[in-house]
Image (tube, rainbow over all chains, first blue to last red):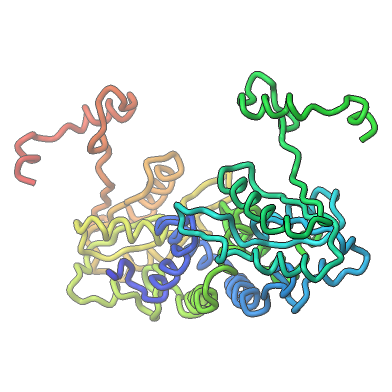
Length: 208
Length: 208
């Protein structure tokens, strides 16, 4: 690679920062020069935080969420409902569902969705381990909290078929409909049609 | 500060990344999760590059450009014209002027421009050290390569006044006019008026 800067140390730093997604070499240089202008302790803290995080964080052996321990804090928490598993695509989705405060069960992070175009097949996802958890018993409901996309639907259907061998386990998915705050005028027809078919009692919304 | 994530290591890393300019907590989380998905060596390289850069890079004692040595490679290069100093605002401006390949003299990095609104006065900039370099003798020209802004003009005028005690030193500034590639239609009147007053011989542009 061509060296652009007089300083090898600056060159290295810019190259490393520019490896991050969404950060080009121009932005990387801007960030590196910013770091140079700051107190030396700021660079030490940033560099150390990155290294320590990568060294210290692993994946929960049960749900595959990120964790500093073999079992993540959610799986280890005995106050949570151990009969319900919420299946999500990514670690970030766990954070998002948690932030709603509406779920008190356990999670299972697939690590993505089935996508033939991107070359992602079911065996590259944590689906076998999900089926194993169900086979171990004690699960009454699996909530599919996957994206409302072609890939999300395909993955959901695949998991549904795999779980159908356990008829006592109820498989549910997130409600789909008009997003809160959205105007009817700007809601797409597919969503609107589905929302009509799956309409709910108004009195239920008053209770909630 | 409120802890948003289950993992303190992730929390620390997101907080540190979010200290960088233009990166909010959402982007910082996206970057941290990206780093977690990569090979552990990637995080080590990134963290180490940041720490090593900050530890190893200092400022040239003569021109105040960044340098890994007491004297930067430009100031130390005997093939450069030591009688001309190009005065710039920032370290980045040195890189930009260098990239033109049109300048073979030395630099002087002010570290900013005079800006009463931002509370930046002349004594916070490397102006005294510039005057000292001129007082030491051997300088025939000082090129002011400052921004074409109110602050750039003020700073240029201040430096011009300070240097006027050395009548043998010619003070020049970058040519101002229609930027290459720009349409006349979209050039502002001030720039256009100035370009008219400072018009140059067409035959000179053919030679260049």
